[in-house]
Image (cartoon, rainbow, N blue to C red; front, top):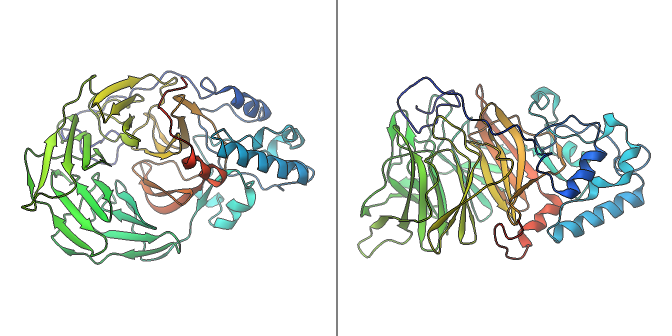
Length: 458
């Protein structure tokens, strides 16, 4: 099926067969997978509805201290904040919201977890200051950001790549037109510009990859309509010049909905769909050209058994290991997790309970946590923030304040300067052009944690 207006149109198979119902994970909720310290948080919030999500919707307006507040007195609030900062620096969960003083707040004034149906857009604040005013200092919170300049249009299946203090958005489509523009967001001023590029012509595309290698973007694959690409383009963001790479060796098949990442002297490619079937092959191309100016592709042999073929998954580099999560083959939505050791090229498959299903999501490494944001769970679009603690391979919960984005998938997300930045996406009816930040606050210390081994504390 081609990438269309249905979640079942996954770019992994071009033939239009009647869609099968996507596989749902067993009816576990995150209450089944909570860690012991999560119990106190959930018991304190006993008035909240039972949910399987973890993010928060709009938090009712309340004082941060004093009678009826979420944190009690000023002294209690300051103690809670100091304890939370210390906990975050130690790689431990935020305990600020487990204070006994929560009992002083009425159920209607407590922070609440975000259900699958967050408030309607018209009821959520559209300024940065309102979200900040509602969240204690240590807490994470969502902001719908105001930006200036030449903003990107509504788009989905675009890429967002960080180089320096700039974010580069390339490609995407609005359900009718594909783009080949490069938009640059200055993260300090939140000002957009559309880059005036030169060099080789790059076709409009969606569901491609754009991988940062120094000051260059390696763009591979993607497609437009029924076309699937296997071209490799390199953009030097300093000169704004596109180069269509001249490649040698065996070239990967045309595809989209794949993933790429930079490791060592190569850009690696995994999976995707070619319009007829989902793929699970692994390729790599050298990031430096040969003496004759060509780039060399090669297929990588692995052991341990590859993951099932898939597209719309995520591949996240953690040291010398790759974490592949979720995705779909066009018929089933996956909730499995596979690890590839890039030193030995051996796959390992880990069972995580519950196996939360996701496709068209984003997954970003923050310290020893994998932040999985939005996407489709096999039945509906989500605005949840799932946090996978990689040393224990367990899902954890967090209080997140502010107005969460409308549920969506096919968005782009990147980490920069203590915040996760989310752009665009699609919810089955509407294509978005909005920009949100998930302010990590005290959790911005997480990237400073020492090295760890995935699954070492299972």
